[in-house]
Image (cartoon, rainbow, N blue to C red; front, top):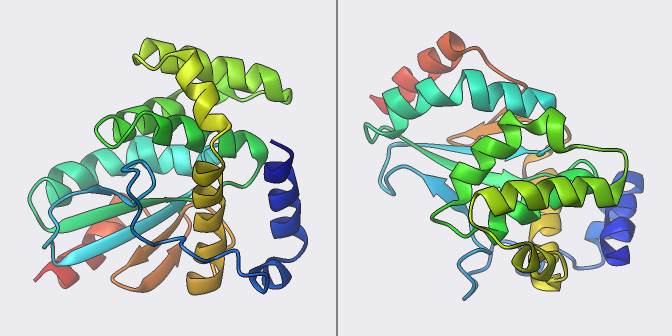
Length: 207
């Protein structure tokens, strides 16, 4: 997994320089592996599209997932007004491992794993890389994902490149540099909005 470390270092030191190397090729391209695509909640024809760039180790992202997303899902996503696209923006290697676990579970379980990863954020994150991986394996096992399968996903270069390119594309296309960042019908909204603030904006767009 040394290429992951090199990639994250390159991103931190110089995103612009790294982008010149062509690493973005295929970041949003269709892929036969259903795990390597945008993960979406909501109807395809919803009038409002929210793209959320988030890092699995980001406490503000966890706060959004726990305090804003449930009401957003009930009032807007489930009613067909909003479509939410989740994209990975790993801020560190531990966040990358969390992204791998969620994607390894596949599209049908992706958002369930996402909920657990954010809810148990303080429990699985460790300064030690192997401890973090072991903690995530335990989450995976409880959700029906064998540890061996998670190991395969960690070694899957295509999955790694997809996740890391997601961060690179977010920075290049939308100038994302912090998490969470919401892109609401093309408008960039960094930080965690209150549900009331978000509702006012969505009501105007959904009309």
